[in-house]
Length: 322
Image 1: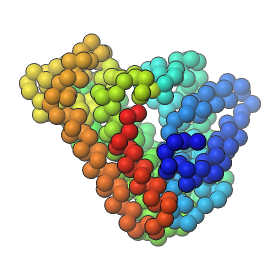
Image 2: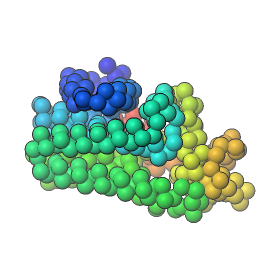
Image 3: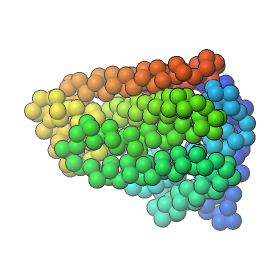
Image 4: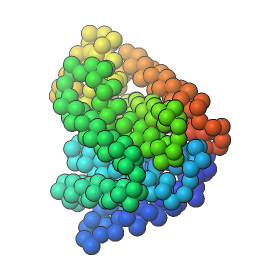
């Protein structure tokens, strides 16, 4: 059982989703099952399927279809993780070796493709064209977000506007698809569907902002990934963009050089520059602002324990240390 209370209100559904995930991972090819089981059992937060369960339940819709939708969303997320780790050449995720570090790039990409395909098979089983429209469009936007991010690697001229476009695509879009599709499945009013869609977008942005903040505040053991990974890959995240824009000439030059070169040679100097420039405070405040905007979206949702859990989840997203 997850320790946070917002999991507890859908504990039975959450357990059922785990069962669906295990069942749907079956394959006649042993390596598919081995890699699929390894990455899905990594013990991540599973926030996206949680959002499906809480959003649907808040609107009075529970049952097998909502659980199946939650599993679909988790399969999509897991497939993107497998592909991302190959693209980023990551060696660690959630405190342990990535699939590509253990089995190689080719099997990781192909099992990611298997999970994508399985999620669409499950969507056919769900038999909701409006939900399929939301999720298929989200899948495209996520891919575009990842390509946009890739095109900006080692580009020190990346603006805050471009950065926001990247994170809205690569992270917030699946949060949005989770809440929007659950509301659609629940037969919600147009106002409630739009409110939950926007809620997912704002929460996803807040979540990614905190992720990028923790790259300069956390330690690898707590985070479950290598601190400074984004810097090593030359990704211009908001703390770096802000430092180049608002920091001293010396701080800006240090960060610009690090982005263009990649690597972690100056990590401690950059951490100091990012902190001194006010970039961490700026990023943290923006994350809190988006979380509060997300909470405000819930006003049109009936007051119940599930809506309360969605509010708690927003608070957790910006207060977390991992």
